[in-house]
Length: 188
Image 1 (cartoon, rainbow, N blue to C red):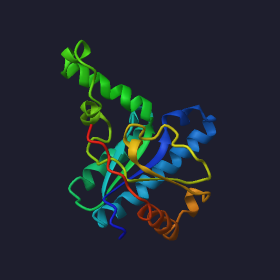
Image 2 (spheres, helix red, strand yellow):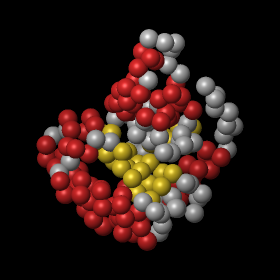
Image 3 (cartoon, rainbow, N blue to C red):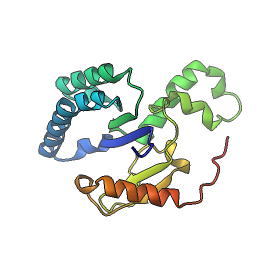
Image 4 (cartoon, rainbow, N blue to C red):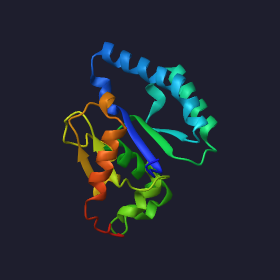
């Protein structure tokens, strides 16, 4: 309804594995339940569901639900909802460099790498760079989330915790964004 075409949620950071085992277990259970209960609703609303990050460490059931959800919603043309799960921005950049240099071995010896050359190799290569980043919970940092893509993104911080971030809070964040003077992103 707000005209958002791509929404990415940072659900589980690659650093979250360092949390206590019982906490990680609870997060995995919540993720599994959300996949079981929400993907059909996403599909019914024409939303395309995608997951970025290294899902290999997740339990088999979660990997199955992710694959099924992505397959079910692949043809949907509405909003694209991406869930970043076991994702880290630094790792994404490092992993993007590997296939780039494999495809362009001459680049290792040639002129400096053009930043846009890595774009097609990043996990979110299918999506435009974000216009707005919203951080809930009173934190005022981006926490290794989409480091490459957030270079020219407007930032919005709120003390609200995620469960309390409702439609009115989203409307306030969008209104704040719309009130800003956006400068043109550089092309190179």
